[in-house]
Amino acid sequence: MHDQPINQKSEYVINKNTLFLEPVRYGEYTKVYEKNTKPAIVRKTPMKIIRQSCIRYLSTYDGRRDASARILGINRKVPINVDHLKGTYLFPTISHLKPDCSWITLSHLKCLEKIDKKQTKISFTDGQSIIVPVSPLAVYNQIMMTKVLYERSSATTSSIRTERVVRAQYVTGVRENMISFFHSRNRE
Image (cartoon, rainbow, N blue to C red; front, side):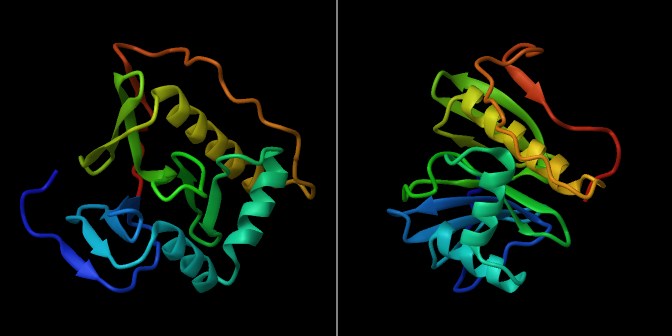
């Protein structure tokens, strides 16, 4: 994506500018994409960054994952809200237990584009894009699960809906292999 040298960091906390966490070199490192910034390499796995970020925001990954799983009625590829104050929702591309699992932030998505059956180009609102080795349907389902988690956790009722969310079998409303999530209103 970028031809210039990449910054290296030893620490990173997920924040409102985080777009994407990509494991590098057998998951030992993470390539971190942030809004309007060149990617940086962090000397930690994506899972370690997520776990430490959850602690930074006064919770644990396991607690957030368990709550999300209960609210959605699912136990595979569970999205989480890392920072409940800013509403930073991330979802995994595959099982969180696999070292090649990438994590995507919901709030910065612009559109998905089908490359082929097993690859999807994800574009972000700042113009950056990445290609993940996952089908467009799988990415779409993860986005929808994360949106339901956001809606259910943001509801103004005193109780939280916890019935199981069904994953889509196909995507409707797709034009020319592209799915758009961008809304014209200003987003940060």
